[in-house]
Length: 524
Image 1 (tube, rainbow, N blue to C red):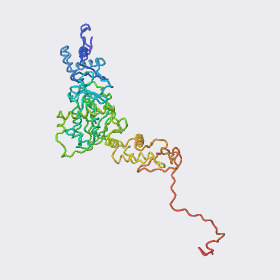
Image 2: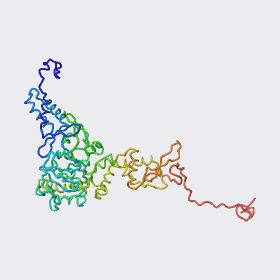
Image 3: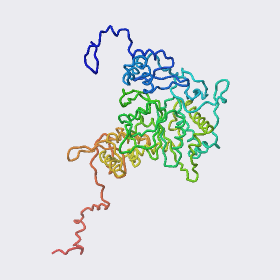
Image 4: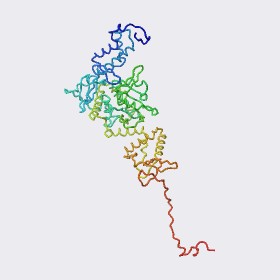
């Protein structure tokens, strides 16, 4: 007896009758195993790639299933169905994982930029080498550009051309970012998205309208093989991230509403390209390592609740502070640049120059290395999201004899947030952030033992926790003498301004009383 899912238990003949006939799954798995142009990527859910003579192209499920259906039609037409084809694909990919691994480019080698007709390798020395396509590079996409082989020497070195200031793209860049340091910083940010380098940063372009950030993003998107526009507020939706599986660039054009914060932990995982789970409609969920870079273009600061160092280091902020006047705007400038081979070649070399600087340094610019505009904007970005940092500006710390009740301080901070319609963090988080911010901005450690003490017991026997600081709207307690660990003595009212009376000795026995000399009342 053999079990048939649709009919229950039913006699279907002896096992001997079917002996020797391979299953469709086995046939298809062996067929794919013999294909030298197939490889399987790493991950909990293996992904199949096919070499297309330029790069290893990720195979979409529907393409694989169509191929499996074509094989079914020849070997077992009676089983012809999408369900059977899907089973064949899943079985084959599972079997091939570990046997036909996707080549991995050596980490110690240069950073790769795959193009339609070759690969540019940016070495850590800053030299750029041009190569013909090779399977061993293991690249899984190609940008929409080709190599100008006339600029490749006999030694394979590719020569970049400087940015032409008289080109449309060059004039546009100087218009939206007049500071050369800002143009270099932007080139590093954008250039990183074209390469195999994982910088683990989301690039945030911020500024009011008519400042060129959207056109910058359009030019960058034109280079990418699979740019995907995405609504960040839907990041944790059930099936919303399925379009991101094969994306090379993810763009966000609107800031999510502050009243509905995004899933920041999930966002960090996507940005860092950590393994993430992707639910798909009517399909097995995937666990993938994202390949896409994130670029967010915002008119106003995006709302985040996590202002930790771990989160902030995932952001590369780029301020756009110039406003292009209506009379200076060029109609269809995006098309004039992206549809011009000459302009896009200029833009490509500019992006490569940024990638070269990034590769030579081996990391993004530190805060000290960034342009002043970026540092100032980063503080503004933090203040717009970190109410504790914003409130810390009114704190006058390290006052020798002035102390404040921590409960009163926190309540003043909550009132400050309520007045501006912003969210106040919990007390523990507030004190953690305030300590961090005061230490960074004023060198004052609010959490040090010498800056904390107890007040004397009140009527209920409670002793308030005091901290050494002064802030607008927060009453303070004056403390003198004694180490910080000793309880604060009750406040003594200051003496009156009226002068004290002089103490006069009674000498009436010697000089007589005033009445004896005609002063005061006459004795009876």
